[in-house]
Image (cartoon, rainbow, N blue to C red; front, top):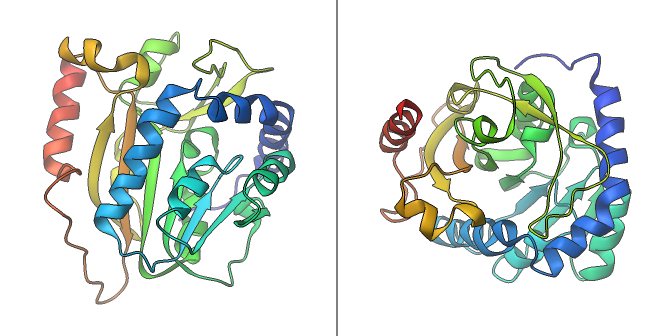
Length: 272
């Protein structure tokens, strides 16, 4: 699954510094509901997907949990959930806001998982992380046999085309420096790394079987723009860890698109 980049320590330090500096503003944006895409679209969509596909007794790891908003929303239905984040400030906020939940200040690239989980979440996380294969290797080690990974990320086929100048879709692991904006139109201090990967990077992953794709429209892309057939800017991917004799999970009929159906839709959008 690849080896750790020699530059990762630098990236990790920069990511931690960015979120430590902006953690309180980010928490306020979510708690106040200013970030409507996260609060009104991403969070309820993920909670509904999990409720539809998984029993209530599963164990869940929320990797990159931030200040714990999503972790808490999921905990209303699933009591066995743990949040981890590289930002010490985020974890301090999460522990203060949700004292009954478990949070750890950890860098997922640097954890040896003793406890194993049925489901791992990576919600709006991996597009800010280098070394995707190493991240996936860590998640693989954190999951139980036949466990699941639910990734929510900026849609690689559409989001950067509208926001990044001189964007080249074909360049895997290309880093761009982008501003982070909340729905309140606040621009956070300093720029954040966005690592672009082609759609195939999420489809062809060693050790995992892609079960389904789902596309979400950000708040600014909601009903009016959707009627105009504008593109979705958020991608959700459900994957299952595969081993010898893995039993692939059958999905419910509603909610998730089949892989073939989703890919046809994405390719159609890209050609327009």
